[in-house]
Image (cartoon, rainbow, N blue to C red; front, top):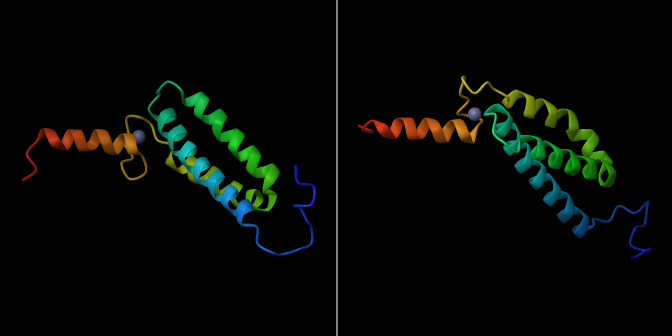
Length: 111
Ligand SMILES: [Zn+2]
């Protein structure tokens, strides 16, 4: 516990806080990627990934409300934009589609 570490009103950068924010954002992105892909391909564990994603977003909302407010709508839109039916591959945005597409191609000689 460091009661004096938080000094409201000062605009000095807080490297540790920035670092934590960056880590949370990276984690959020990784979880969102995986959650969207799992959901689209009906893979087990999708619900666990969404729960983890929501937990990370909730932490961002509590600890970095300004960042959350600025980013939340964009996250929702970006995640929704990448949803696709398993039968309609989205190899640009989905790693699973890309993987399966690549292995399809590899069956045939490249040139
Ligand atoms: Zn896909």
